[in-house]
Length: 360
Image (tube, rainbow, N blue to C red; front, top):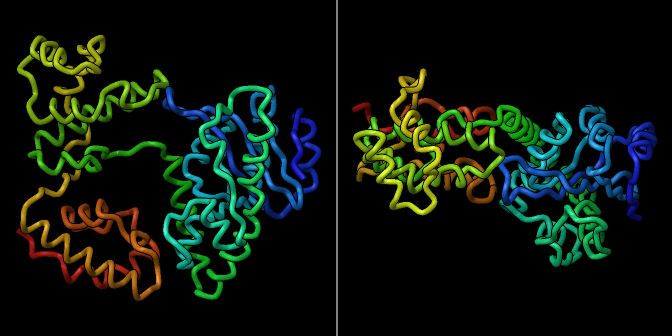
């Protein structure tokens, strides 16, 4: 049964029952903003599904104790964006977290499986996809929207039970706990210290150009947060790469260059110039993207092959152990990536460390 929660008092009353676990999902809007706008919260509690309207005054405050209560397990699927949404709307993150998408990967059921596909794999039920593009901020929501929203949490407990049992058989419950806590920590940190490394174009830049790119991307992130606009609306990746690779001689030249880019932030040209030419305080610590040389490509391929072999040995889906970005970081810095700390380091470092090329 699905119930529409209309007042914070209703949510407070149900919280007093203190369930041991809840299923959670959200609907949010983020097309024109930097921060997600929470539009609906779906909560499975026992045999009930609560549809919670966060637009009602006081509702997000009533929701916060549910999220903060560590005696209640929060079961979610592919939770990363939902976590950001909860942090913005409620000021708290749901702990402890059981992410069924991560769990299914670690259990060898499937890597990166969507909720609908995982529901079918575990329960045999086929869910409709009709409301994925709905306007969730409108009121009242349609019956079709409410049914779709309820479906998003109805099967979370069944998935949790199946995935948790498999993880227990494999001795990997701690793996999931570690990955869930790492995900939560990344949302708490809420910023990428070295955003330039993730841009593919950076591997074709020399060190000074990569540092200029770092400055621009950090400035962009500050502007996006302050104005609550998507990053690409502030400065798109193409223009950032051009400015970093071939910086204009002065502010006037920058203005002329921007005329060739329809989406260039002309009103912010002075700020862009300042960001481009002002060194960051920690640039000396900045890692660099791995240059796209033949030797580096061959070294990266050896690491990738070793990861693939280890993945097969463990019965895991491709992509679960280590991403290309993290392997490139390992090759460039010769330091084990923090993102791969814990159980991944234990299963990977012994086979990858001997494959690192000799220094120089």
